[in-house]
Picture 1 (cartoon, rainbow, N blue to C red):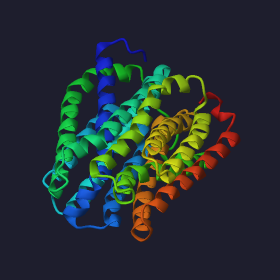
Picture 2: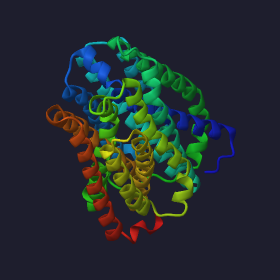
Picture 3: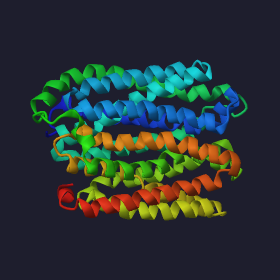
Amino acid sequence: MVLQDRKLKQFVALLFLSFICYALFTVLLGSQAPLMMRYYNITETEQGFLTSMLSIGGITAAAVCALFGESFKKFKTLWLGLAILSAATLLIVFAPPYTVVVICALFAGIAYTLIDIMVNSSFTQYFSSNAKTLLPMAHMFFGIGAMIGPYLMTTIINPDIPKTFTRPFLLVGLMTAVIFILYSFSAPKAAPLLQKGAPPKTKSKPADVFKTGRFWSVLAGGILFCCFSTGIIAWLPTYFNQTRGFSLEMSGLMLTLFFSGALLMRFLGPFFFSRIKPQRIFVVFSILSILFMIAAFLSNILLLTVIFIIIGGAFQSLNMAALIFIGCALFPDRHASATSIAIFAYNIGGIIAPVLLGALAQSTGFQIPMLLSCILFAAGVAVISIISIKYKQALKNA
């Protein structure tokens, strides 16, 4: 579908903005971890459990979308995701008991996964001729939110007053509510145009994707990468605060720098994806990211650490889009299901890594957990390399 109609342009703009809200929420728990642990008097493992609940909600939503996503009206499902995310985020503003925050995290995970899957699959399905431009652009907007989020969040809190962790939740909740309202007016106008150009629905059985080895292979590689990415989001600021002795503001800035590198690379995403196969981008760029992240964790020179963090963030930033393109090439008739592979990976990684790395940090400090995340990332690169060879023919059109 060509973006000529004003209604479609407004619709696509709101898809991009919804990804900013999604990104801002994903960095909230990591950036506010020190204050939340002090306010609720909880351990690193319990703080990591909040991220795990996000991922449990995400897996639930991803499973439903993998099975039935092709029959969903994507614009309505995205509307639901925005509604739930704004409500769950704003509830945390009241600093409810820890148990309630856990429940909010569960529903937020469901919500932002619906946003993620429906935005990605909408671009690959409804805007297929522009997908290699629009999809990386959507991830670029995610990068904008992820980059500005950690530092922005630390500037509006008071390190001496733990309860001020609620201020960033208020900001993100209100932003999401505004996008939800605008989307409520825009989506009904764009829906007839989307439905008119929609391809015929697949007749395959819902569970077919789970019966193929290629689904589980891509999922395994994605999970190992996402153990790295979710671990970084959850614990990088705390690592620099507790292990390297940085202030809360400077620690949040380090995660911002990581995502600033990612954002710069995402600006170049359309250029790379139009010239290089996504599976090759995943493998080659990931190797570079791993090397620079290990260098950042081992460097004792602040300037070099900053440079390595930025470059390490840059070279891992196209991986989720690459996984989506790989999935869509392997399952060309099931775009929602294919997109769900990447989302499954992200949320399973989110269940495993924050708690695992947090528990390990309680006994060893954060240096070893950060290096372990890089080792898991390397294992994921090995898996995707094997997939690239085994399914070379199917991936020719990726």
